[in-house]
Image (tube, rainbow, N blue to C red; front, side, top):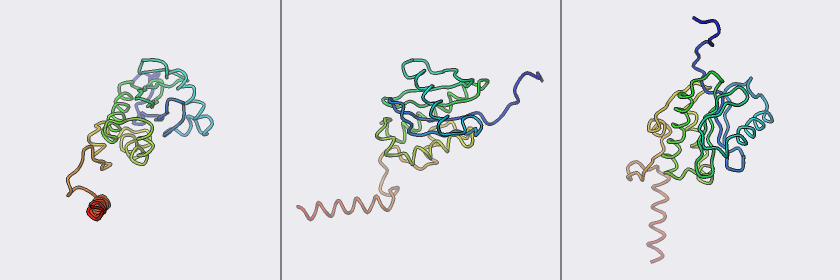
Length: 178
């Protein structure tokens, strides 16, 4: 084996973050504690990445010795970061899975307001795709199934007890008001 080539590793993803179109952090996960150990360093990195990418149409950038793939959606920017010698296709697979999973979870309404309203589910989606920098899943359907979000209206048998009770309350309220 060539001594100059890096050792293969399962730890593919160094960081994953979502910013709004004003460079505000909505979600960030850094998987390499040595990469940017403090919050200030992370925000400076995110600001630098945002400034270099938010006005371009490309999908990949090389900044600060990192390979960064990104995608924008209405008022959001999704970023996946890997090392300089990381396979861009692997990083793009993670980005596409994240994007499509959010699309399914938020019912094709991938924008800041709905993302913030469903932030708990977004964190679950991210954790299903990448754990500790290791890619676990790349199929959006499987991710959504694992986090148990329904993409379409589910029949009564698949609704939660809280949803059934809420529906019953609404029906009773309307029947009394008539």
